[in-house]
Length: 254
Image (tube, rainbow, N blue to C red; front, top):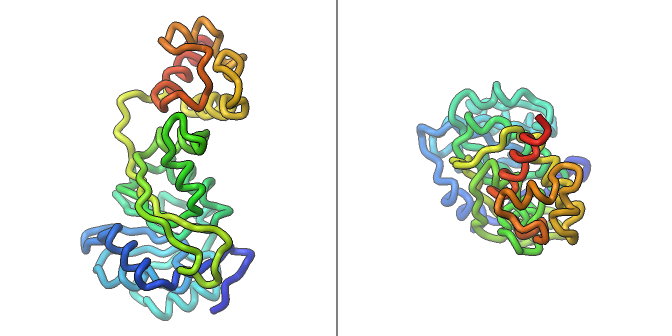
């Protein structure tokens, strides 16, 4: 079946890459696994062979029909993963995998972050640039809003790059595999919405100092009270420091 551009389809076809991905996931018979965008079933086939309890979500009705014929015993949901009821797809601790279309990767991850109590881990094929942003550390040029927010929710590790030639049709970018595991946080945000607002504002002014980048949310004296130098730039703050700033902003607004 031909790839459809409107769905951002690039089918993984390289057997070596598929084998490496399956090894990284290491599916077990007792696992609940949700595969997003199975496409032609390149990853689905070894997942089924593992004996896991597998659920597929596919937006393309023609591919969904093909997959139903190929894997009749597997639960398949035809629909948009950004709109389907995730709670019904995550009955208990679930492992999530997928070769995600680049245009939905970030909103989908943020949607999944809201359901982390039901998620054991996630393995995604993403644009390498996105994976580099997710895993970036403070001071790195790729460190930004996506880094802070994804690392607030999950521990992340980049596993390996995947060349464009591993797909049909070949995308114009290099991809990478990332593993995300729900974080066991020692410092938590009182209001996550405010944390995201503060992080977004700060990185919109990433070349400015914190006293300017956080103006309207935190005063210079409040930043100093946290043991943080207001002359630092947003890209130098750790996730925990951003959380402390957001919690101080909450306290100041009460």
